[in-house]
Length: 322
Image (cartoon, rainbow, N blue to C red; front, side, top):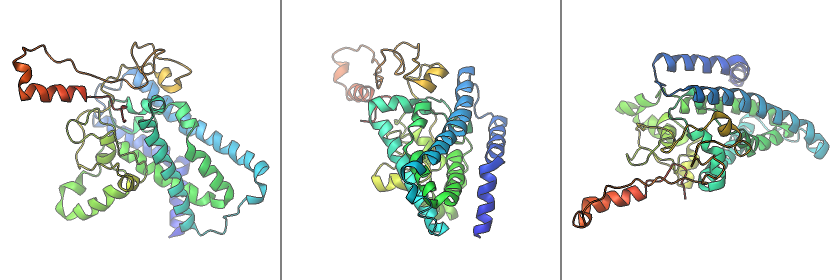
């Protein structure tokens, strides 16, 4: 069994992932799931994000880390090499994904940090094209990259390769516009499996909710569902929202179509879009307040008007997670 898993992880960490993502992308495009929302600006941003941060920046940081650590803690090299594969897998998986849960969550809760993560949420669509769409500095500061490098140096390199393969599969398919989890909700016989699955790992239903442009429909929940590989962290820390449905709209409600270079390199490069969170004098977190029509004083005392006004004042951007 271990040999079989080793073969799969080696294949995926080689040419397997590019081939898988290419096939998934072709399937998504053939089904017309991006419609006309994949503009030139979005295409450039998604392609550069797909190539540079995960395929260039992260491996370079890992390489440099493994070259640097022998000069700092030479006595601990391969100190954990005696740990069995299964325990090494759990150590790496928990350390990597739990760290990313909190890293991700803080970028939604701290206004200054939000602008580094905003790039990932600006896409008005879901799909493999935007799965790695991140600000380069956000990726550079990925705490789990450095934690995983240290654990690899300590002798857990093989389990780390398998965790990377498994995590990439789960995260890619959670972002995909192909709703592979739908049959688990549709057929009653599969409901027990769905109950476990949706609480254990990220699925399209739970992760798509995190990318919704609104919470008004009871489906979108960008104030939670922060888990990447494991949704279990959201369950444990009280940020889970499970509806078994999918949002009708994705992205940021006030998205201005910021230039791809600003989204990749803010704050080094700024957006030229006036009022954008990424512009030179833009707000850390932009709040959308929908203007209500002017009504007579008699109408303003009607319950319907009062409810609508309260709703509009609370219609904050997906980043306003306070």
